[in-house]
Amino acid sequence: TQFILDLGVDPAKVVMCDSTGVIWKGRTERMTPEKEAFAAATDARTLAEAMTGTDVFLGLSIGNVVSPEMLLTMAENPIVFAMANPDPEIPYPLARETRPDAILATGRSDYPNQANNVLGFPFVFRGAIDVRATTINKEMLRAAATALAELAKEPVPDVVAHAYGLQALALGREYIIPKPLDHPVIRRVAPAVAQAATDTGVAPRPLAMDAYVRPPGAPTGFPRALTRQAASPPRRPD
Image (tube, rainbow, N blue to C red):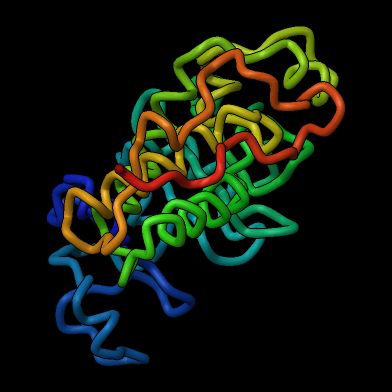
């Protein structure tokens, strides 16, 4: 939640829930200082009430806590990220049937828009380690997220689509985030993180960025090994 607030989401429009219900200002049951920081000024007391009229549902909880009726109360073209694994907060097929207009994502590899942590943490750490970053700050995480968002807008190599049994992939409701086997991911995320570390002064040993990333089209061995590393060894400025 803090990350999306750092990206610019209005805190007044965020309602967080836990197993007890809505985390609202004045609640005393099962509260902690961490929860108190996100307590909302709202009359909603249940997840169902909190979802009414909303544009986005971000689920990081347990499976099957969202019903079709709850989805139907959301605004037009809602964004539903049901991230619980292995069972999402609402099954993908049921959510798609209930809200054909929704943008849906889960943590499952057998449905479109898998939000997989392998898209983030290996390359965040790679970029941080290569510049000997002393910390991982919010600017570095934002750079990683922005790199993934920009990559999702670009043409997807056929070999990636074929690896998932598809003829093609293009930005739309069924493709909003790069696939874990998309080899340009490391070319984008690790350098973006390294650059953000340098720009924010937490990189004691900055890299020559133009030499850090293998140019697009350079051999990567991708057809032979989808997960082969695609970034060149670090090079220091002269």
